[in-house]
Structures are given as structure tokens and as C-alpha cells.
Amino acid sequence: MHLSSHTWMRPEPLEHTLQRLVRLGYTSIELAGEPGQFPVASTRELLQKYNIKCWGTVTVMHGTRNLLASDPQQRRNTIEYMKQVVNMSAELGGQITTVVPGTVGTIVPSSTPGNEWKWAVEGLREVAAFAQAKGINIGLEPLNRFETYFLNRSNQALALADEVGYGVGIAFDPFHLALEEKDLIAAIHACKSRIVDFHVGIS
Image 1: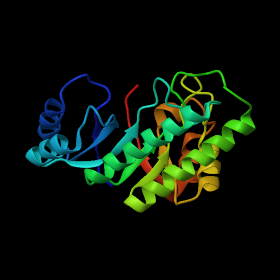
Image 2 (image 1 turned 30 degrees about the vertical axis):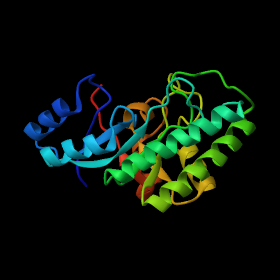
Image 3 (image 1 turned 45 degrees about the horizontal axis):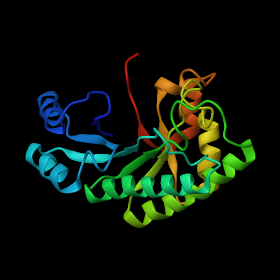
């Protein structure tokens, strides 16, 4: 086990973040999945400069990014975006990409539960197959009900991961799941070795 920090809480240049991580003794970082914000060549150069490894990337599901959308082109665009985020992790020597299937902040479904589940499985299978070929582990991250209506509990994430296949695991975030699980510790034990990423925060 090791501790990484991340880039999506402070609007600052990556170099500032890396300088702070060095002072605090961190050795790796999890990057927000914005390839335009973190070009591979310049990002790799900064990581090498500060001797910080890339642990992985996280899909940033804002705007029109949504595997659950009723519009097929929107789903296709989201799949291609997720592949870019996976590729970003692979190019920077990362091990994981954390995936949230739907747009964060959307609490009204775009179709039936059955349709949205089917679209999520289809999209994630394509992304996971791509990731597996790149040597990247995919972790599905359940969020609390105030940020998404889809995938709120660990048992849902496990069921989705099982249906997708390709060794997809769980990105477990107690900040979210403490609001949704009746027994948080039992949920952690239920996921066991399927946990590929574990987010820790103070709230």
C-alpha cells in the first residue's frame, strides 16, 4: 500500500502541486482526467523533475460526458474520452483509471434503469478492454445520491464490474459510501481484493 495525492481540489499549476507533495513526503499522484490540461510530454517531464510517479487518472464526468445518455453519439464521445484518460495513465506509467459512469451532478435519469445499465455495460466493456490492453486497471467509483442517481453503493458497483468483466475493480471512497452504506466496514470487506483504489478525505 502507498499514499497518493490528487490534482482536482486546488486550481493551481501542476508544478505547485508537485512541490507541495515533495515537502509532504508523497511519492505519487492521481491526475484529473483532462488530457488537455496535462499534456503527456510536459507532465512526464514535471513528474521526473520532482521524482513523483503517476499512480493513475480519474475520469472527470462534467458537461456532456455520460455513458448513460440516451443519445448514442454522446455515449460514443464519452467512451472515446474515457479511452483518452486511460491512455493518459498508461503513457505516464500509471496503474489505474477511476471511472464514474454518469455525469456528476445529474440526478434525473435519461432513460429506463434497464437501458442505462445496458449502455453502461456496453461502454465500460469497450473502455475496460482498451485499458486491459494498455495494462491499466479500471476502478468503478460509486458516488453519493446527491451527485448521481446511478451507482451509489458498493454492491451495485460489484454487480456492474462483474457484468463488464475484464478484471474491472472498485474505487472505494468512504466520503460517498458513508452516506449510502448501512455498514461501511462490511461494505469494505465485501469488496475485499476487488478494491483497486481507495480515496481518503476529511469531512
